[in-house]
Length: 84
Image (spheres, rainbow, N blue to C red):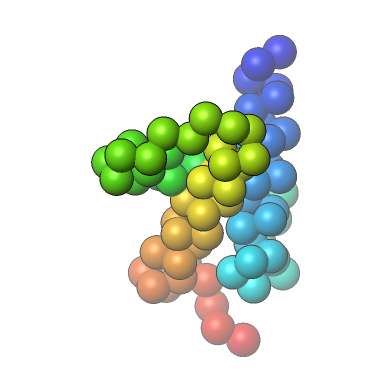
């Protein structure tokens, strides 16, 4: 059950990050889930390196979205997303 919840929250985080980064039209549901899962891991890793320990649920959600947005930014610079 925890795996399914992780996929749903990952999809939500990826979708919100794609809206923030204006790549929503270029990403599908699977890409949103993958970006949400990998990006939130990246965000929590970076937060840990900076000494930020999110205690509340809202701060954890913000760090997850920020990490996913950072991953979308990196993927865009690599050339994964095409400019329209």
